[in-house]
Image (cartoon, rainbow, N blue to C red; front, side):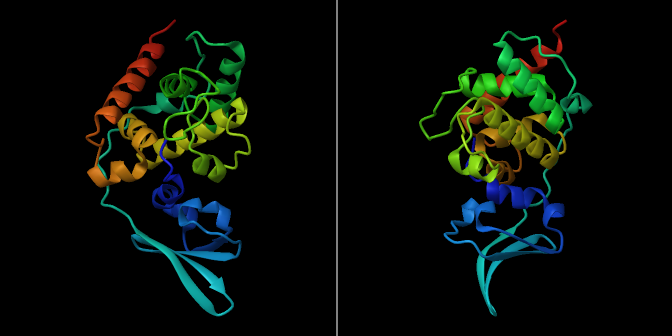
Length: 220
């Protein structure tokens, strides 16, 4: 899980910030804000700029220019089948939470389960060498952005990871490979390489999760 989600979310969802609006400092941890205040996001063409206002003084926090459109190959509507039944072996409580999160965020629960297996081997207490935590391996900054108070709480972690996965699927028009690559290496890397990044780890991750997910689609 990449910790650049806050910035990526701004790039990935221009409709969310169409025109101008305000939000609090905690909404954009990547901007490294240390105090709450009025933040205004301006969306002009392919450039998004965030400002903080102190009375009549305006401070530019960051400016992002969207990358050229990436060619995508939608996997299919099955990715958004929230009512699929999980048949892969796992503890009952995990199956229940994953199924509920999938229904809530409109993602096939078999895909969520495949991601969780690859990320943590279904271990809610897992911590990666770079600090990603829990079942869905959320970085602490990403967890805060998603409003998660306890990253090791199974329900919070799964719901947050599923919401993030759905965001990536929407961002990359249902392209499974790009969404999985972004989950592993970050949306910025996918944008930068205009496709799946040439990282051995990321390519192995995409193959493994896709393979696990597609195998689960064949289970009866």
